[in-house]
Image 1: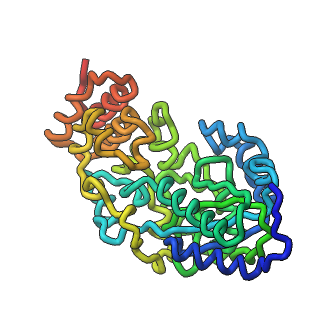
Image 2: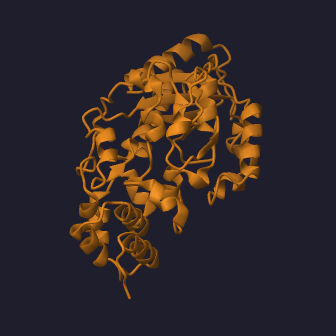
Length: 358
């Protein structure tokens, strides 16, 4: 990529890009250079400890993740964006977590797949830039390639990486998605966000599986989001009781974060709850066959884990539920499921209710 706009006022263009981004529905736009040396060192240490679990792709891409110019040749700037997703009208998160019959799904996954929403808006932002300055080189990324999106967000002023490893903004909390636009335009960079976690460690204390093993260090192998979304094999037996009724992701560390008192409900209808996923019961969702799962998760990020893992997660949650005739009946109906993964977790759940099966 080679920029061919030497006479351009890059300071003015940088401000214009931020204005266009806000017009397109992003709550914030920041710009950074591509020097991620400090974050690269942290990534290497994290990988060496094996905290990435089965996410082998984290190592497979090598330095492309921390060196944007290796992923997209010629990149010198990254435009980082955030879009709020907190579904203000959704059923209360705390109330769902306290009701063992309810299914808790991470707030980000209640609506339409965010990858599609942000990618579309970022492409429109690139088109706006192109209309203004002519053809330029760019690539759009939304959690879809080896990109250190949190590090880039921090460097661009979007927010700081908190002790739970999520990005926090001092005026908007942490309930937002991130996206990036790699480019060869020498835009004016923003100042990095300052860390405001202080001595607070509520996120560390609340984690159900104690996956935040130290400030700013997450052992993904213990994280409920990893266990219910990224892991494709059996969930470790010793961790199953700690999942509670969380069947897709976990928001506990964000729910308790003091900075989220500043979070604002999203105005994006795409992120509003769909298919009553914010009020569904475990038994209701466990009754879905694969066709129903595919129909009800169409256009949702949930679909990517596949039907067997979906059922695996719900079986564990039912095993954690109070014993009742309805729970046992629901589990017994799946004890001979076609999937060995589902069968194994269903039998485990039945054992939690002292039900002996052949």
